[in-house]
Image (cartoon, rainbow, N blue to C red; front, top):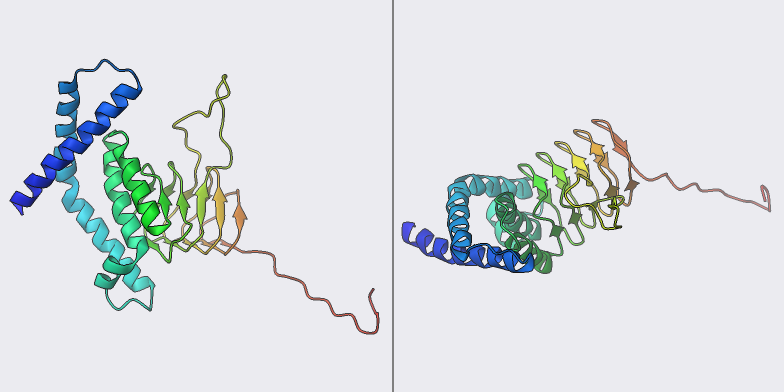
Length: 238
């Protein structure tokens, strides 16, 4: 195990170093390449120290998928076969690197998962424990989204921004909180669109194909208006 981690760490230092050099070149930064290498080594060492916690989080995600889907025969099946588990695995790795301010590499990891699963999670999103993304195709989770524990999300859900505030030159302002906060034990059914810095309270249930731009209290139930059926006999009521 130690030998495998050593080899992986050498590869990771090289990749993180490349990302840092890319950022320096893009920003025309005259930073010393040796300083970038030192930062890459520190980021890699910090990442390796986080591996036990990452492993625990990923194990809980696999258990959540198994417990949340009657079709799953075991947590191992969820690990090998479920796109939601793969997307969360990539996200949790990318998010740690994002926290360490490693440029480019977290986005590459996120887009790799997106291409494999159809699930688009920005590496900046904060996601709690025991998350289950069921089916998953078309799920979009924005950069400043905060998701609590034991949340279930179905396919086609968007956790996005309602608008993009602009600076004096008309460019989008970076780094502001613009995506939803989803508290613990929330269920969001397929096709729901939740936009803006709103809060979905603990235990709420958001129905399918709902368009939502306002807060939902804990335990709230949001669904579409039920269709109305009218009968006309012999022209009556017309």
